[in-house]
Image (cartoon, rainbow, N blue to C red):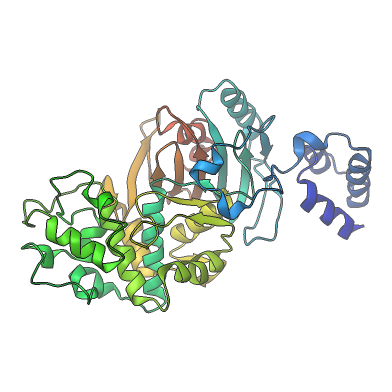
Length: 415
C-alpha cells in the first residue's frame, strides 16, 4: 500500500491541497489517508488541478532554449503546493504551515491571476533545508528548463567556484592577470594595460575593456574560436587605464572567466559543466547555448529548471555545500555572501536589501535575469527563493510576489 501511494504521488503530484491539509489537520490515520488518496485517484476526481505540470513528452527538455519556450502553451491553471512532492531529486521537502500561510498563498494566487506580477512562471521557496512552497503557472513546468537570462553570469561564477573546489584554480589566481592563463595570446599585439586585467577585475565587471563599436564583442565571435576571439578583443580595445577599469555591466567579462575554465579543465568547459556541476547537483535537464567562439554563452543563454536553480542557491547559502558535500569553494562562496561589501554587483551576484514597513531591513544576495528571473538567498532568514517569468514589464515583479506574500511569514518571526 505504501509503495502504491508513493508511485501515485510521484506520478500525479499532490492530489488536492485541501485533502492533504485535511489529512494532516484532523488526525486521519495513515491507512485511511492512503485509502482516501487511492480512491480519489482511481475515480479520477480532482487530479487535473493537482497534477505536477510537466513538459509534453514529445518535446526534448534539453532543447528548450529561449526560442523553444516561447512556443509553450500556458498552463490552464496555476499549480500550487504548500507540501511539495518529494521527487527524490536531492531536495528535501516540508510543509508551509505557519500561521497565516493559507491566507498568504490565497492572496498570492489571486494577485497572480489578476496579472499583478505579469507573466510569472514559477515561484519556489526553500527554508532550513526543505522546499516548502512550489508554484507553476503559464510556461512553468517542473521538468523543463526555463531561460535564466543574466543568471547565466551568476552560473558562470558558480562554475568557477566548482573549478576552484576541484583544484583547477586557486583563490590566489583571482588576482593574477587574465592573459597569464591564455597561452595562445600574442602579447606583442595587445593594447597597453590588457596585461593588468585580473580575474577579480573581470568578476566585478571592471576589466576596463572598451570598444568603439558597440557590437564588437558579438561581431568577431564566429571567425575567431576560443582564445583567438580574446586575442582579437585585446587588440581592438581602447588602452586599459585605471580610469577605464570602472564598473561596466557586460557579457565579455564573464566570457573571459569561462574561457579560463575551458583552458584549465580536462576536455572542454562544456564537459566540465556537465560532469562537475549539473551532474553533481542533479540539475539535468538543462540547455546552455554556445557562443560563436565555442564556449558557453555567459551574458545570457543558459536554461535550467526552477528546482535546479534552487539546489544551486541552497549551496550558496550553505557555504558551498549541497546535501552535506562541499561542491563549491567555501572561500569563494564567502566572498559572494559577504554583505559588508554593501549594495552592488560582485562576483556576478547582486547585493541588495528589502526595507519593510516597520523599517527593518533584510539583505538578499541574488542572481537576477531579465524578464523576472531570480535565484535569491536571504542569509538572515536562511531562505532561498527562485522565481521565473517571461515578463515584459518591471523585472522585479516576480520577486515582489514573494516579498509581498511569502517572505513576511518568516520576517515576522525574526523581528
